[in-house]
Picture 1 (cartoon, rainbow, N blue to C red):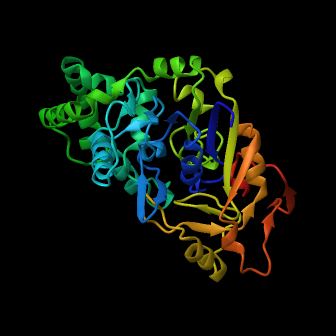
Picture 2 (cartoon, one colour):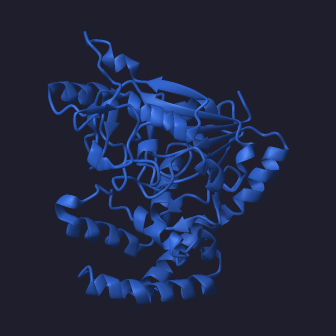
Length: 366
């Protein structure tokens, strides 16, 4: 196995990346989650135990592995602590020797979640299908340079000042635009200082750690969330997630140079699924689609929402191969198609009577 391997989804997410990461973790020393938030879920089954991981890399289930939440991730401390507690109750050892959080990763704040759900309500039929977990608004603040980072939790004065400045704007927007209640500063401050006491020991400069690990010839596995078609730049915009889900983000989302990545592996199901709104060219809205959903257990591991199901989309996959620079492709759930007499594959899109074989960026052409 190459030293530094990136695992990315080649469809709309839910391709079975967690299982692949779990397999490859055995041959790795460090596992890095490099983007997304707790809007993603990787399901791992170990014996009779089922683990659904939202933030912590799947490698945490393997003794002796270092797991890193990279700077490209947005972190909800409450969800992280719940995940840690759940894993500990199932016998997993978690401490600062095997879990690290980048000090540069951004925090999801309570107002981010309200923004998420209130905006979806205002969009009505034009909603984008967000999970309502505050992921998008947290990334908005990151890009707007007003976000609060995990490292800020380690300095009470810095955190307090950033929160104060943010709430002046956020409360105005909440009350006057979204018609929602505002937030009281001291309540959030004390809540997040309690979080700081519990997760502060994990927060550090993970970029430096990864650089040192690479110099020591350690094997690093980079774990992506969601899938290529949900990438904010290269997916079915605007029906996408708020981060870059493609392989290049493994570099920027973890703080190492792109020349340090040795192998890019994509994961795709033998059919296609997606959760939420947005174009889905091969979607089956009939009994065949229902059969795929039930046979494949296609329900969101994070939200429980039923996934839309359809035939394998080779046009979208070709797009994923190109924008990720895939070296290898893993196909999952082939067995779900075992009982079918005929398996269909999409090799082109009918666009106003003309067949196109390359994935269009304009969703009106689907």
